Length: 479
View 1 (tube, rainbow, N blue to C red):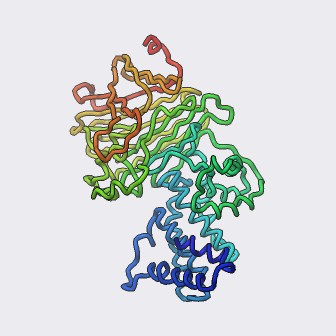
View 2 (view 1 turned 135 degrees about the vertical axis):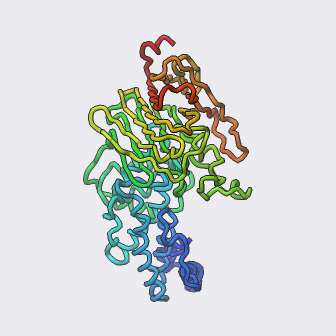
C-alpha cells in the first residue's frame, strides 16, 4: 500500500488537489513509516527476515521515505538507512547460484519489490547501491526462466503456484532491461489482446517502464542442465534448443522448516511430450479459508499442524517415505554431485532428511536419453528401519503390470519400469478425494507406491532403480 500511495503522489500528484496530496503524505508518515518504528524500541519481524516480507516491506517503505523526505527528513533518512542495511539479508537467500528458496511465483512477488526498490534508488539518487550486482541476484533470472516448463506451468515446489500470469512477467523484464538479454524478454507476453491478458497485476504499471527501456544487446539460451545450491537447492534438465520430446525434469533437496517449505526433499516433476507425469501439488489458491478454521498453517515444528496436509508432508510428494513417518523438518538434503556434460546427472545426499530412520540415503537422477529418466536410490538401513516406500505422484491413468506401470495422459504414454526389482508390482493410492478435509483437491491425483517391508530386504542396503521412459524396453516390453 505504501508503494501504491507513494507512486500515485509521485506520478500524478500535480494533478491532484493539494489537500489530497497532504492527506496521502500524512498517511505515509503516520500509518507506514512511524508504524515501522515501534515506540517501545522493538524490531518488527520482517525487518531481519530472509524471505519475501523483507523485500516487500522495505521496498514499500523506501517509496514512502523518498516521497516524504522533505516533510519528514529524519524519519525518511533512518528508514532508508535501515533498508540499505537490511535488504541484503533477503538478497543473501539467492546465493550462491540464484535459486529463490520460496519458488518461482514467490520469486516474482518478492523480487518485484526489490527491483522496484533498485529502480527508485536509481531515479532518486543515481545508484541502486549495488542491488543488481549483489552476488547471485542477477543469476536468479535464469532460475526463474528454467522454472517454467514446456507445458506452460511452473515447477511449483513449496507454496509456489503452478500457473504463470497471462500478462507476462514484468519483474523478469527488469532483468532484461538491465542486462540487454532478450532471453528474459518475451515480447509475445506483452502484445496479447486485453481480453487474453485479463486484469493486470498491481505492479504492471511499473513494469511498463522496464519494457520501454529494454534494448537488446545479447541473446542467451537456456542451459540444458543446471543446478543451484543454497537453502533450497534445485536442479533442471531439459531437451535443449532442438528438443522435440519436450523433456523437462525439475527436482530439489532442501528442508521443510523454512519459509513456505514442504517435506519435499528428493521430489521432482517430470514432463515428456508436453504432459506432466510426476506432479507437485503446489499451493492452495487461498490461505485464508484454512487459517480461519484455527488450523496452524505456518509453524514448522516436527509435530506441527502444517504436516497434516497432503501437499505439505512427504506422503504427497514424489520422494521416499520411511516407516510411514514424516521427514525430519530440519534435515537438509544437499546436492553433492552434478554433471551437465554428456549424460547429465545429479546426486542428492538425503541422509539428514531421514535421521533416525536410515543410516544414510542418496538419490541420483540421470537423463539417460531424450525420452528417458533414471532414478537411483541407495539406502543404508538402521535398526529402526521397518519399511520403505518409493513414491510417484501423478494425475495420469495408471495400469499396473509386473515390473512397473503404464501411465496414459493426453493421448501420450509413459512407462515406469522397476529396473532393480523386475518381479515387483507397485500399488496405487487414490488421493482424489484427499484424506483430510482441509487438503486441496487435485483432479485424478494418485500415488504410485513401490513398497519394501524390512523383512523383504536382504542385508543392510537397499538399492532402488526406476526408469521413466517414453519407449518400453525388453523385457518390460512384454508387458
